[in-house]
Image (tube, rainbow, N blue to C red; front, side):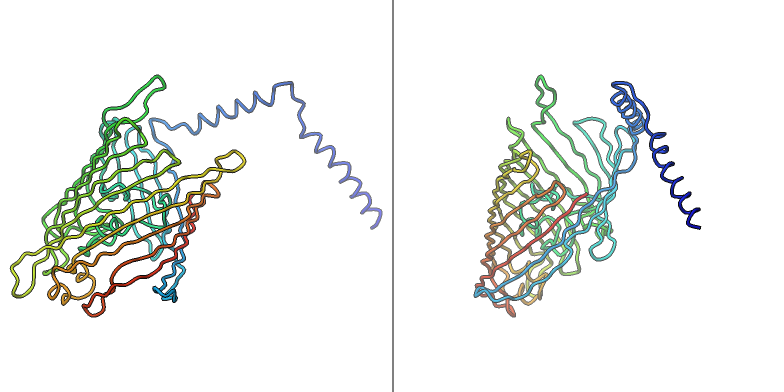
Length: 402
């Protein structure tokens, strides 16, 4: 047995160098680079789409968040860990002029976020049909991972259909058809640089994402952006004209407009915007119907990207300052609390200001960490009585995109 074992081991020791020698090919000088080029060429031929058609691209991002709310005295009121967003997207091209995107969110249950087809025959005109973000404000189109702080500002959320004051809509999205395009291109010896005017205008149900229309009125939404002589500079104006229906009491006009300015050269980011909205309701006993309440707000955010790392660009660190203000008549609060507040105090406004300082850090291109502290100067509603109230908020959010 021992002799047989030694014979087997000897045969293995002899076979190993013979196998290694058989796998090593003698190559002429330059053969490595030539084969690499040929392999790359074959790969490019394989990956090159025919007539614009290519394989679907899968991407997405995950956001985990911690939030703590504290009283004016610093006492911990509540705190929680949660998954803020878990998104998965599939997009691609059906031809040279037709593209598509499907996006879902999985934080609570599978929910459709985006689903549209886009036809773009030229730079000046494109049209898309399906469910997607409405073209309103400068901030809403920004991917939440790329925001300077942990989430969209209060004014944007309340007047752009995220948690709208009218009580209708979600995700800042709707079902409809939209035309977009870029006009007056700036071209130099290196080719196309940017367009002076970008536009987007669409017709939507007006009832929010994944919802059928429940009135006979379609909402019209549009945004116009102008880059006056500088690609990094944007002047923006948006308008929302429509009607909503929540129930017999809360339905009517839903009109908003916004104007803003942004400078973003990749390092310095400055953005500010003013939003205004009117929301109709049917009034109450003893009042002439219909009525409406007003909402308005504005924000300003500034940050600077410091880039560092081995190549000087691998990591980004942005200190951020943001101020925002939002005020609404008690009619808005009544939608979320009781009708009593609206009836008793129809002209009272409850303004709230947010002072935020934060750090926005990209250790990798695919990983982002934000830490924000906010001082909130507002009012607290206790059984229809509004008292001045100060509070503090700390938010940490970790995002990973792929």
